[in-house]
Image (cartoon, rainbow over all chains, first blue to last red; front, side, top):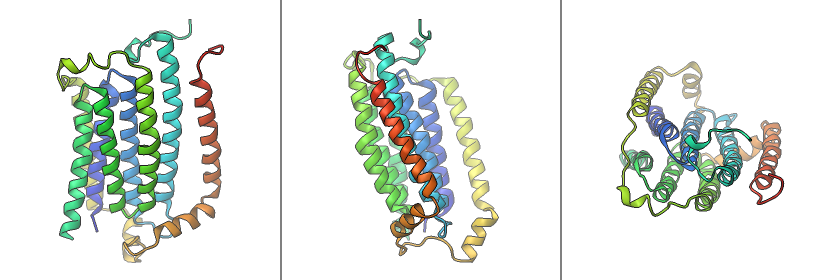
Amino acid sequence: MIPLDHFLIVSALLFAIGLYATLTKKNTIMVLVGVELMINASVLNLVAFGRYDKVLFGGQVFALFVIVLAAASVAVALGIVLQVYRHFKSVDPTDFDSLKD
Amino acid sequence: MAIELFVFYFLAFIAVGSAALLVAMRNIVRSLFLFFLTLFALAGLYVFALADFVALAQVIIYVGGVLVLMLFAFMLSNKTLLNDVKEGTFGLPRWPALLVVILLGTIMGYTFLQFASAPPQWIRDAEQENRIITTTDNTVHYLGVNTMTRYLLPFELVSVFLMMALMGAAHMARKGGKS
C-alpha cells in the first residue's frame, strides 16, 4: 500500500503548478486549465484520505461530486470565454478591462 | 510492493512532469494535449488510492468531455495559432509568480510531510480498527450503496445543479440573440 505522504506531495506539486498557470498564462483557456489542475490536486487529496474511510466512503463520493462540479464550471466558463471573445476579439485576460459599455 | 511503488512513482512523474511542461509550453494546442496526459496519469494515481470508480469517472468526464470542450473553445477563439510556434517552444518564466508558487509549494509540502508523520486521531483509529479500504474490497458496490442512501440529497442537488449549469452554458454560448 502506498503511504499517504506520497499522494500529498504529488498533489502539492500539482496544486503549485496549477496556481502558476492561473497566475501567468496569457490565454483564458490556459487559466482554466490551471484551475482544473488545482481541482484535480484536491481530488487526489480527497481520494487519498478516503482510503481511511471504509464505512462512509466520504472521500470517494465527494471526489465524484467535485469532478461533476468541475465539469459544470468548465462548461459555463467556456461559454463565457466564447461570448467575451465575440465582444473583445481577444482571449487575453489582461485585455478584459471594461464591463458592459 | 517494490513494483507497486515503482509504477506509482512512474505515474506521479508523468503527471507532475507533463503538468510542468504544460505550463512552460508556449503553444496552447501542445499544452492541451499535455493536459490530457496529466489527467490520464492522475486517473492512474486514483487507482493506486483504491478509488477505481473515481478513476473511471475521471477518464470519462475529463478526457471525454472537458478536454474536447476546451479544444473546441480554443479553436473557436484563436486566430494566432500558427504565429505562436515560431517564437520558440518555451516561454520565459515569470519570476514573481514563480517565486510565489515555489514558496507555496514548499509550505504545502512541508505541512503535508509534518501531517503525515503525525496523522490525526481518526486515521490512527481507522488503522487500528482495520477500517482501511483494501485491494480486495468491492468499492463500486459500497460506493453505489452509499450514494443512494447516505449521500442521496447531495447527489440529487448535484444532478439538478449540473443540468442548470449545462443549460445555462448552452444558452450563453449561443450565437446572436440580444447578447
